[in-house]
Amino acid sequence: MRVLIYTIGSAGDVHPFVRLGLALQARGHEVFLITSGHFKGLVERAGFGFRELGSAERFQTVQDDPDLWHPVKALPTVVKHAVDPSYEPILEYARELNRPGKTVMVCSSLAFAARNARDLLDIPLVTVHVAPSLFPSCYRQPVLHGMVFGQSSPKFLKALQWKIAGKVLDALVCPGLNRFRKTHGLPPVRNMLAEWWHSPDRVIGLFPDWFAAPQPDWPSQTRLTGFPLFDEKGMRELPAELEEFLSAGEAPVVFTPGSAMKHGHAFFAEAVAALKLMGRRGILLTPFHETIPSNLPPEIRHFSYIPFSEVLPRAAALVYHGGIGTCAQTLQAGIPHLVQPMAHDQLDTLSRVRDLGVGDGLHPRHFKATRIAEKLDKLLGDEKVRRRAKEIATLFEDTDWMGRTCELIEEMLPR
Image (cartoon, rainbow, N blue to C red; front, side, top):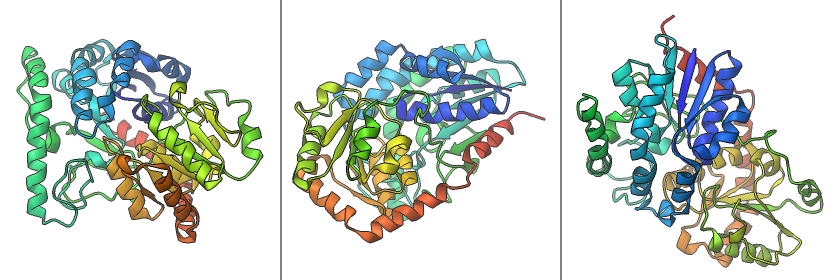
């Protein structure tokens, strides 16, 4: 079987599909990963075929835009700079690589334009959502920025809220999408949020049901498997001084605002001040050296990148932005979470961390050293939180989430 994997986004969006591709490859399938040129080296190290979906320079342009982290402006920014330009190349790569009767397409949430290729070329399509926030529901609904009616609201108000949200998304996405579809003789799209961006063939949620249980109004073709847990372990050389630092004292608190956050100056300034207030050791993770305060004390270290699986099991807690992949690694490590949600699915991640009883959060405007220190002291001193984090970590044992995901994709081809 040939599998064409389309994904749009940062490392947190690409890593799950690298892990899935490796699992499919190990089962004897031929894998092509179509994503930004920024990730070409990673894709080639994984041994996949690569096609470029936007240049590395375009990726850098989007990453440089502070609106990417704005709770309201983030989605329009992504649609304009990443989604709209993807329509033509996604279709053309499908034409080029399709082996009729032997090809399946897999797309991430933002690479929904693969459905155009499905409609035109009759290739089976699997939509893969890495986060439960991508499933609207009038039952246990996702927690998102700008929502007026919360979880305790009546169902009819939730339904009204999702209807309005759907019209907003249609107004944002459908003009460009439908212009493209018209040029290829396809009917126009409407009702993106509730229906169209979920493939009618199959939808997979890459998270377990204990993290987000399926709701009655999710698409009936949805199946949940589990977290992909890919962090480039073994594909990058570890910093030489990491082991020495980890072994030199108590478990550090790790801080990261995400791999694509180029505007983390305030995040790290407050992190350093909080660690000093607490008298604790810390690790700051970001590839953007310019966001790190100068003259760090010896008990606080900065690293550009460390696979989470190499550091979190030896950390006291993680303070992060609420990315779903980072959340999964923290759950597996069995340590407390402190989440500073900024945009995208991050508020929903925080809500589920709280539901599980393994952490808490701070709104960006409250992300100040004294509040951070206060929250961390409370989490680290709470035996119930620490015990619950360890209990959740045991749910990662003896799982074959990726094997089940591969089976669901393999079922798309006729036997």
